[in-house]
Length: 289
Ligand SMILES: [Mn+2]
Image 1 (cartoon, helix red, strand yellow):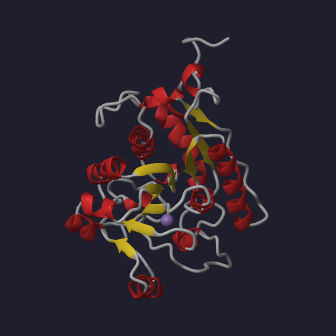
Image 2: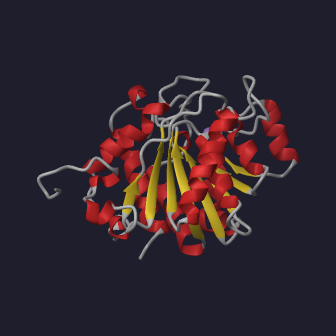
């Protein structure tokens, strides 16, 4: 029995007619994993906080003039942590995302730490010819290994860059070796200032026809999102992020995305609300009917 007297605590709190697996085009995959985090921890609580906050959103997104939930959004049970190794966890996420994509679903992976993006992006890379990756991040994440693991969250974009070309927006923190690696290899990693000078159209032009978006919330300025293990000043603001995503969605095809690194206990509740709205807007932009 299910009717309006009951609340469904899935993403956007949708009733079964809009969240049933079979009828849903979009699948939200919560991954409450933060085992390699090196700064303050707590992003394992991110997916739960985003889903909780998503019940407070208007289902009509006035900013882009559509109702994203109409395509159907199913929320999966949480992915269990693979405690053997971070590499095995990436493998587990890749397997699950692969199964969902092969089933015709548009997959939204909710971290957890940014490492969860490695498996999700790989699943898409192996299924999409010429895929490029748009990464939002304050950090370079280009360490080859960190704290005994090649799958530490400080290595996320290095691992993804091994399988697909990356365009990063938001860079303002790196160790010297990472910065030299980026410059020597001519990688397209841009600080917020460089992004503002180029504009969203020029940024979208650097991406191929099919784009996977990986979103580390520390790309936002720490005054916008502070519930993070690694907050950084000098970051991006909501409207410029939305403008870029709207431009990319208009000019390219967004095939899937992840939103990661929200550690709700480290900041105000409004941060989970922002993350929920970001997820919802990205669904609306990428999966319009
Ligand atoms: Mn990151």
